[in-house]
Image (cartoon, rainbow, N blue to C red):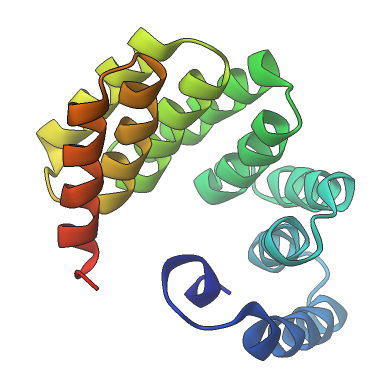
Length: 169
């Protein structure tokens, strides 16, 4: 399911198969937090069914309250539906069991940005670079924050670094 997000694989070529696998997995193990989180992921990215994605992520958290990735997806849904304060509370919970996750920390910065806390988002992105300076997601998110501040040269440079670390192209 991640291939259409971070590569050139068309969503239509993988999501139907992924959704079928999720449906089968839910039948086989309806108490699997991982399967419910996969369901949330599919609903979020492919269907844009944000209420369904939220419900599936909450189900995953209910089944495994220390499952960081489920908190991440719940926070993503909340942030994308302009429920910024809730999103920030939830993403902080995602960071607790896995404080060194590059994607969780990058998304924390993005959700700060989306909440209008641009300076705090930049601080978070810089902190993420202290863990790994080549993580392309952090660079592309930082570019948004720089652009919001009118720091266009820095935004473009951050885009260039994102492209470089993603693999070029």
